[in-house]
Length: 564
Image (cartoon, rainbow, N blue to C red):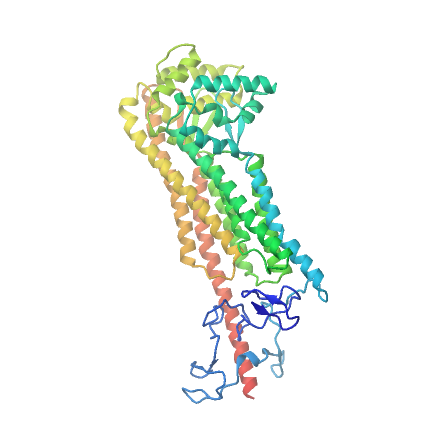
């Protein structure tokens, strides 16, 4: 524990200012530039000055603090830096005066003159994070994202609780008959007027996970949704308990300072919630609220650190760089997960797009599912024929009784390029390449999602701890890998388009496929992300060099004044 020279209060070993009176502590700061120094370091990370001894301004060797002359070259030393005031030339270069460096903030004393006001500030500040995490934990049980219900074509939200429950349903799935009976009883007991509301309350995954319906797509999607939801619950609950315990200790005056990992849980929640756009679909109300609360919490805590508590602020260029790059990352992720292949019916204006998760459904031959779907639509058994599906979709599109959303859904599902590759006319020639490309698309999508989360965490980590030295090469490498992931997704859409158009042309079908402009825009924005990161980091580095040059000039002036 450190002791304040002004009020005698006990402070943490890594504290920069006294938590009782706001006084700047005399330890853990560079004797030359005044920057914050971690424990047990030998040189300042900002200016390179040693933490012990005096550096000779002629030969650069380090000498003991008590030495009057350099032990290497005999040059007269100007005394210890710790006792020397920082001086700069005046406007006329004739008079030296004390410097009031703009980069070194003067602490604002909270409740100066009374320890009660400072203590109240610390207690309120300590309870900010537990309150935010409590809201996030409760929200994680509600609607996370929306998906289209295949029977009613309604967008229904999947809750966090339903997503976690889906993992356990996969272990011991019920039969279709058991699920239908359970849902019918639930629907009657609730007296629901809306089918969408009933499915939401009953649980989308609870309704569609049964023995007869389980396939590789259901398993992968359920595991992704469930693991993300479970991670959100565990992270928010764990950090809520830890931060609440710390806040109680602060209120009991048994702890000082603030929770060490304030921004880490909020950063994880932000990244995981956003990942539902990639693994799930459009975000539901609870997920949007969680993104807002996490972002607002990070802003509040960061503002308190850099304005009220006067911790060292990052450079303006670094802030702008993180903000611009974060926007580009979000846009690339949204565009790359929204639509990849356009599906257009030639005799109408109906057009839709197939996303990545719909394309890698071709990881297995789902010909039986297509035949069952077509049979239910025609009221009997049917073969999954490309021409039959084309005629059926055409009749539905020309019908005025079918909604536009339903027409687009039928076009995207029944006449997607993956579906055509498994129809009776094409399955023999296109089954194997479709399975291979779908598996590659699946792993590319996972890789892209992981890079997106890592980039967001990296940016939030830099914002939370701006004093730490991060490798520029590593940061740019993450950006390059992120763009490579989007480029892989773009490249893998081409085989789907080629195979789908080849089948449609040979069988004279009314459907045509093309590349979506969104995935092209995603790759273009990804390249802009790399350029922005590299250029602004270079500007930030040159800005820091200029500041160091000014600091060195001031220090040389100080040493000359001391010698005089």
